[in-house]
Length: 186
Ligand SMILES: Cc1cc2nc3c(=O)[nH]c(=O)nc-3n(C[C@H](O)[C@H](O)[C@H](O)COP(=O)(O)O)c2cc1C
Image (tube, rainbow, N blue to C red):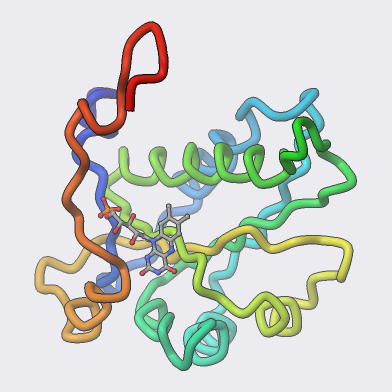
């Protein structure tokens, strides 16, 4: 895909085909994250790549912040958990940059996947303690996000349709609402 097409066509995917993501693509996704910019180039991110079906099932059943809100990830052949070591990033203007660093890297990873036709969905509604337990992630590491990855299923699952209410509308604000020129004019 052209770069612009990758950015403009991206959307969250919550229904997946039962087809593995090839190793070379996973490697490219990791490379895209590895090359991301970061606070003082400290590269605080750490990624747990989960392909074990039993662990994915456990995450699907137990990772939801509310009940089984992440149940749809059960069909994904791959789940990646984006973690960070806050001690390896920094704070400026009272802003924690481990979140920014890891978000940039994870988004680069997601866009690289999309370039290969592989969908994903940023998940924030997870129970950090549960994910920590399942994946044996140490306490000093924060879990920033997780996402399923896989080839999109043409037909959306009932579960995905139901989740739309929680995920919010896909509508975007107009330019006027998000951009002003020269001085703050909102
Ligand atoms: C920080 C962040 C947190 C999100 N958390 C969730 C989530 O927990 N569950 C979910 O299904 N989608 C989640 N999403 C996906 C959004 O709902 C989705 O990006 C938004 O509705 C716009 O749709 P689109 O990605 O298809 O353009 C999250 C997205 C972001 C960026």
